Each structure stands twice: as C-alpha cells, then as structure tokens.
Length: 483
Ligand SMILES: Cc1cc2nc3c(=O)[nH]c(=O)nc-3n(C[C@H](O)[C@H](O)[C@H](O)COP(=O)(O)OP(=O)(O)OC[C@H]3O[C@@H](n4cnc5c(N)ncnc54)[C@H](O)[C@@H]3O)c2cc1C
Image 1 (tube, rainbow, N blue to C red):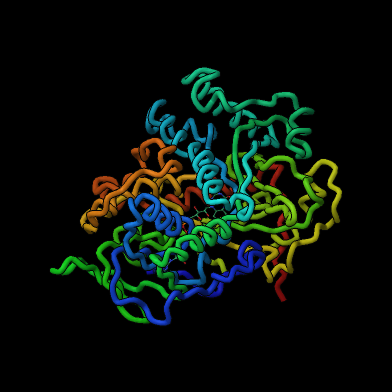
Image 2 (tube, helix red, strand yellow; image 1 turned 90 degrees about the vertical axis):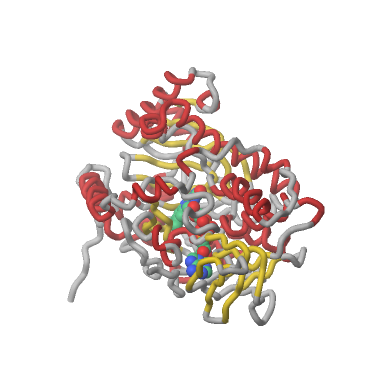
C-alpha cells in the first residue's frame, strides 16, 4: 500500500511558480456527493477534468470533485523535466518488434500529435506564454560510438520500414558530421545527433492554469491535502463511496489519476506499477543560451537531458545525472525516496555546464536558481509500468501520460456517455489519432502481467546499469565518508 509521502524535496517548478492555488480547497467541507470524482491533481487529473468540460455540450458539464493527497499538482508533474518530447524514432526497434511496423508507427503518431494538440489548446485558452510553452527542435546527442550506433540504428530501421520521407521519420534528420553535431547540440564531444520536433512547458504552471480555468466555471471542487484512502464497490443506488480523512464522498464515476500510487486504491495494479526516482536541477544561465532542448547519450543507460526556459526565467532545467548515479542503481530503480537527494548530484549538476556545454558563459560551478534544499535540486517519483505502457480506460471488473493529453481526451467522452451527457469533440482533442492498442487497460493485459516477476526485472535492470557504470564514460563517484 503506497500513498504519496508528505515531505518530498522542494522543486523549482513548484516553489518558483508561487501559485495561489497551491493549497486550494474550494469549500471548507468536502461535498457529500458528486457526478465525477477525480483522484490526483497532476497532468492526468487536470487534463481529464478539462476535457470533460470541453467535450460536454451546451455547458452541461458534470459536477467534478478533485482530491489531492499533497498540495495541488505536488506529484510527478510538479517535479519533472518539462520536456514535451515524443519518441519520434528512438524506441522504434523495441516497439516494431513488439507491435510490428504499423503498430509502432501508431504509438509514435499518438505521441507526436501531442505537440499540435498542446499548441492548439494553449493558444485557444490564451495561456501559452503564461505556462512557458515553446515548440522547437530537440536532439539526441551521441556522446560515444556506442550511443551513435544505437541512435542511428533506430533511425535507419524506421527509415527502412517507412521510407525516408515517410510519416514521422520524414520529420527526423541525422547530423553525421561531428563538428556540425557539436555546433548544433552545443554539447562538447558530441559525435553525431538525431534531430526532431519537440516542445517544452512549465508543467506545474500548465496544470494550475487549466485548474484555474475550470474553477472559474464553478463546476470543479478542488480539495488539496485530502488523500483518498479507500474506494468502495458501486452500491445499489449506483454510487461509489470514496473515503478520506475528512469524510466520505459518493460519486457516480471515480477516475484514478494517481500515477505511481495507483496500487494503493486498486490492488490489481500493485504488481504492475512501481516507483522509480529521478533527479532534476534548476541552474541560472544567460538569456537564450541554450538553443534547443536535448539529451546526451553515452549508452542506453547513461544520459542527461535539459532545456532552457524563456525570459524572464532563463533557467536551465537539467535532469538525468546518470553518468554519476549509475554507480548505485537502487537509488533510482524501484525507489520512492523523493524526500532525499541523490548522493553527489547537486555538485554534479553545478559542474555540468562548464564540463559539457560548448562556450559556457555562466559561472563555474554554476549557480542554482535556489539553494539545494529550497528547490534548486530535487527528486521525483515517476511510475514504472511493468510493460512500459500506461493503463488507460475503464478498470475491468470495477465498472466503473506526451501520452497523457491524448489518453484523457480518449477517456472524457466515455465518462460523459456513461453519465448520459451529450458531447462534441473539441478541436484540440480531434487532433489525436485513436488510442494505441498497448494503452488499453484490458482484463487480459492486467491478468497476464500479474505473473511477471518484477523483482527479477528490477535486478536485471540493476545489473545492466552496473555494467554501464564500468564503462569509461561513467563519472567518478564520490566516496561515502564514514566516521
Ligand atoms: C524526475 C522526473 C522527470 C520527468 N521528466 C519528464 C519529462 O521531461 N517529460 C515528460 O514527458 N515526462 C517526464 N516525467 C514523467 C511525467 O512527469 C509524468 O508522466 C506525469 O507528470 C504524470 O502525470 P500524472 O498526473 O499521471 O501523475 P502525477 O503528477 O504524479 O499526479 C498524480 C497525483 O495523484 C496524487 N495522489 C496519488 N494517490 C492519491 C490518493 N490516494 N489520494 C489523493 N491523491 C493522490 C499524487 O499526490 C499526485 O499529485 C518525469 C517524471 C519525473 C519523476
């Protein structure tokens, strides 16, 4: 049983946004009853609530209560890397092996559609600037021959199956000349790169902006610091009861947007969804210094990824730190300790700009935006699904993520139909192709995954990571000092 801990490390996204909604409670007491109860106020919960209102015709939106265990959007969405970076080509080998060339393309097209849909949604709401949204290009920078062989291999395989100018692959390009690659990526020692469209956003501000819009309609009742402890079966009157420390609520429909913590309320997901821990830092940088978002790869395990926020912030957000943390993989595999920093990571990040960026013009070591413990460097827990895909849809036997906006756009009309509310598809939602097959939370998928030995899988991952830690590009790891 896992609920979010209440003392995670502080993140720049949350501290820097200074949102008045942070500890919002729409009413002093919880409503006794509602049409739709959403558990979780991250990107999934907020975008689902948004779609419910946009799809519902003639302003006939259902009443919604949203419960959040922490402060509003205090989970992964308030602690991530801010990259809207669809996998245009980089998982092609794995996905085409599992789902065939066309199946893989469908998954990729669904991810890629998020760029256009975000653009449409944010512009139509007039909040693109407020949430620091930007479209542009991103790169995978190969920092070793091993990485170049893999990245180029993924690109070539997709090109072979779909043609150089085929769907999606036609939007990717290779930079094969090392000098050009270093210049484009600004990464010292980069030997080649793959480039494709991408985006970036201040994720916490995005969620808070959506919620602000919804709260303005008075159809949403948002309750922070209110964990859902139990969800009952449906009673004879058609209601599901959700228990919280502040009282019970009866709902016609319950939506679990609880990410890594889903197994607390849904037993059948306990073995299927686990926690993994990431680390991110916010670094001060000269305005417009980083031209494109991107990632550095040394092998399939060791990487960093980064972006720079637009003015007035100009902050570099960097995540990964894998050249360092790879020495101790249990720090991030099957690990929920987001109240702790990773060993040596603040120093690693502070040294990164001078060490890795061509022509760094800022300080060395770099200045963090805030002190380490005040939001300069933080940990965050992401959900690690046993088969690497989200579970989207009605949970079987209980009538009742760049993947998330499209997944919630798929779900909203299903719920409205169940409630007997007429709906129309909003323009931004119409951009999405059908939900990819591997996302469906089918009975067969959930049952067959129960037998996967998660601990063995984690141990295999740890062994792979330890093998990477022996490679020459792994950074020296600080020694543990014991008295
Ligand atoms: C360090 C890190 C870096 C990442 N970088 C990127 C990136 O650059 N790009 C990208 O696309 N993705 C990234 N991700 C993944 C991305 O953040 C997630 O996929 C996304 O935020 C998930 O949104 P969500 O709403 O499903 O989950 P969350 O944002 O975690 O929301 C779930 C919410 O449910 C609440 N909750 C859970 N259980 C209960 C309960 N019982 N009662 C009440 N509330 C409950 C939680 O407190 C939480 O606020 C990263 C993740 C991490 C951790």
